[in-house]
Amino acid sequence: MNKIKEYQKNNGLISDGLIGKKTLLSIKEKLGIKTNEELAHFMGQTDHESGHFTASTENLNYSASGLMTVFKKYFPTKELALKYERKPEDIASKVYASRMGNGDESSREGWKFRGRGALQLTGKNNYKLFGMFLNKPEIMGSPDLVANEYFFESALFFFNRNNLWKYCTKVEEQSIKNVTLRVNGGTNGLDDRIVKTLKYYNILK
Image (cartoon, rainbow, N blue to C red):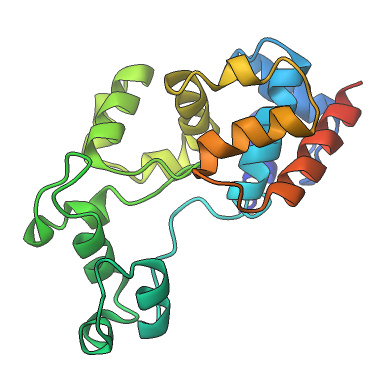
């Protein structure tokens, strides 16, 4: 289900999936976001990263050529990539092994703690910190809760932990670029992020 529809249904709003001022202000209140500028940045980034609130779990169903493009470091040869193609659990277990607090490839923790939530919370260490943030230690045993129950909260955790709010005092192209650099590590999709962030800010006016 679209995560906006799901949020609306769970919070007494008309669950039509349309993001109007009432839905935005409800999210702002529930998450404790302080200003409309901050909310516009938060929504613009999460909208872009989650495919308009439709993707809550990382898609790792890569072809061999995809693996050699996206994860070239881990799949330097076609022969190796072919062994893993279209095997999401094996792929995640390999590329996320022995980092971010995960065990080695055989532990399968790379798969267990793959990206989930609006900004793709990834890695055992981050799941543990997020569980502490919410005081929900059960997340470690049931990581799907991040996708199913705490979709927006996981993005809030990311903004808080990375102190992104200091870049959200204004809503203009430079501030959106500043936030994008911290969320994405680069400027992928910047134009779309700008359009979405400005759209939400205009709705809130």
